[in-house]
Image (cartoon, rainbow, N blue to C red; front, side, top):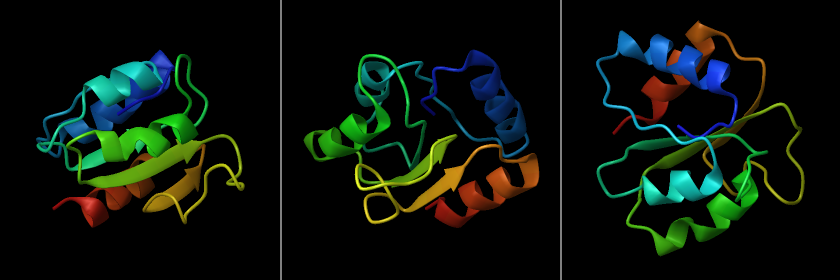
Length: 109
């Protein structure tokens, strides 16, 4: 999961701890791309991050071995730069635990 908000990222990790998932974290877009490989099933991505934004990360996914699903969680509304045509789903924050875990379950391979 890639989000520059440490507290939000920590919340998502705690929520996922019951799922017994292996998780990777990134606090910016460059780290997000560096952490992607073919073992990653889901990329949970914030839109506004340092170094590379969510839309820039999405543009570069084809340059990685990642073939999973991308879920955007953002305080911003979808727009022409990034919307549900670009990713599997785009959800506006805030999101609660139940909705987040349902999303993850939906896109796990």
